[in-house]
Length: 279
Length: 275
Image 1 (spheres, rainbow over the protein chains, first blue to last red):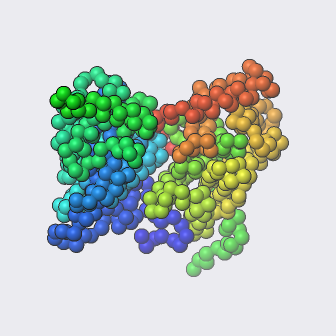
Image 2: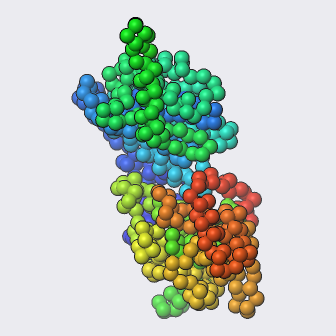
Image 3: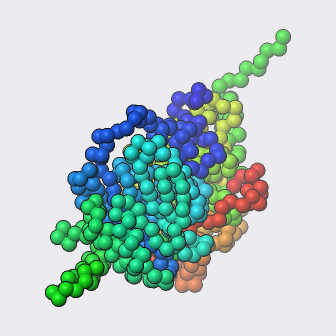
């Protein structure tokens, strides 16, 4: 950049061609990118002490999709946070949930949100849902080096497809593999239990209310069997983050509505004196 | 042996300034007006894809006149500047003053060191919590910055329109009021033969201070027609508020997803034009 004159915006700012914030950062200042940083070689045993985010579930319903995440972050066997939020709006019509190393995952979310907004402002149009998912896959693949050192980040992405007019869900692996899930999916430490729960509770043609209830139910099942997943906490009034994405955009379900859902689920599961089955 | 001609620095700068001014005056004007709930931008622009008014950041917008390729380049640079700053610090730390300074330095450096000045004039505006905290910066082709209040006209017959606007604009006008005023002023000509601009010929956008995060919204033609139409139907006195409230209502609803991407045909048409 020897041509840069003092005071003037650097050449990298006025170079036409890319609508991507990541590509711009890569030419302007790669050290700001997660994969632009060098890590010490070898295993990193002390890193179990950094917070990890746990379970995210997502399911489609008739007219959109619902994503929900519990509120617990763990560091080893300790609870690092009871309040962490792991489901975010990626833009007006999509949501992203994260599992894995919390610090890196939150940075990934921030960059991804910015990437979508940047594209929207420069191009004057939204990326397609597939375009967004592909972009996220590239970003996850860029962090493969970190993942191989034990700092994996696994997002779950979903949104309302304005062209196809339906909700869609995409899962990813650490190598940047992108897989479309047609019905439901879960990621994180409690995902095995959540997926088992969703398998029994999901049905085609459910409405938004059913979907929210099913998502919370799956999180309760995950929290039941996985110590790293936090269940709804009625004492502290901490409820999962539940987002509904439909043609009307991203909408977070309010706490008082979740409180009712949780009470309802607790009622269903309450053990009866005469040896009733606890689900 | 031939001697190079001596050109005095005064003459050199004057020639460049004249060149830039001529280019800017060829295009159509953009007007920027403050109203009670924000800042409105309006211009005559038949293109739906090649914008002269754009979003830069949450509370910041950009309007330009002159050569499309030059101000488009500055717009993209501004979006990159704002997004980088918001990413490095926080969204709250991005402000119009910093961006206006960066633009001013760029325009000034190009004006003095490069063979051709940029034929553009810009407005960078930031909407605040109250009308008093709104910021409007007007930047010229030579890098000079003016901190404006109330209303600004750039490009075309800027001086004539500015006088007309100054006579009718007053603080605390509502959205319908400023949009009607802007359209009337944009349609006026020096020889007194005023044109009536239809919503399809207009590009109008607002920075609405009542919106939560991203304050920038374009006003699509149907909404504009409503804002303008009430004027003729219901008269000055009682039509004012109804239209403004309807518009505010519609603004508060979900945003329209982005418009279709720039088509090649549209781009070809306007590449050499001063838009």
